[in-house]
Length: 334
Image: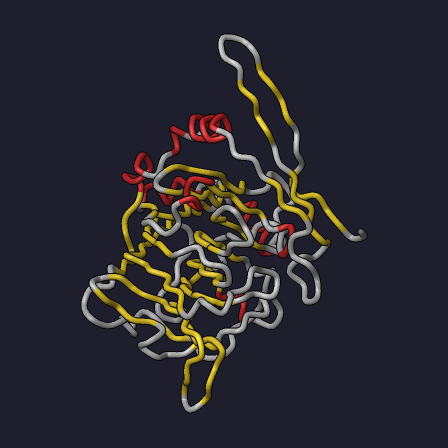
């Protein structure tokens, strides 16, 4: 097979002493551009989860838990989805097929596809539904805060659940405003996904996309425990700090981070800079060309969001965060 790259490799190591542990890494082989039309997304997927893997990861990151950082931040945006309808002064409906991934759904502004009930937002994909007189294989909703709310740096979090069915590609994420500029676009603009669900994967990834890492080489961080119970409520979070990192959290535990490059910083390798505001997106797509497909028995799929929040560093903490970054900002601007 040609044009393959190895995203992960598999090594088995046994440690002996007071206790014996076996640590297993895994191997995933992708096509050179697995998300491109006409290519197979996943050639081979073999993963082995171990208790040691989880223990080491959580022990190493214990001092960076979400709650321990909370005193540095203040909330600037929150939607608890109270009341009996979606707040359209915050959320916009995108109408149409939707960009990217070769999905089959048609996004609508119908209350059948996006509605609030018992203080929970439901973003629901429905099979064989009519919208504006046209029959579609699937209808769904894609909501965003573009032109209504944007932010630079901070912490994003949401309490989410959805059933792991074959076919749906559910996501809560943030996209740069530069995406719509012709001289920038995606992936140069940058993207932060703090929740995605597609049963092609046996985990729930949190991902950064940018020019140097996109499509099959996107950088993902994940917690196996979350996918095992993705249909239960979990809190997914992102911490975005200008001079440090984009870090991901599941239920308050830090699971990984992409650090700012130590040198030669550009828009291509660090779009998460002070010039680049992001906005929020919630969507429930169906049958991406690279993913699993729904069968005839699946008639609907519901992505539920209990609340979503954005925090920023308090003034003093923000000043410390930005201190000494003039040279790096100049590099980004050049």
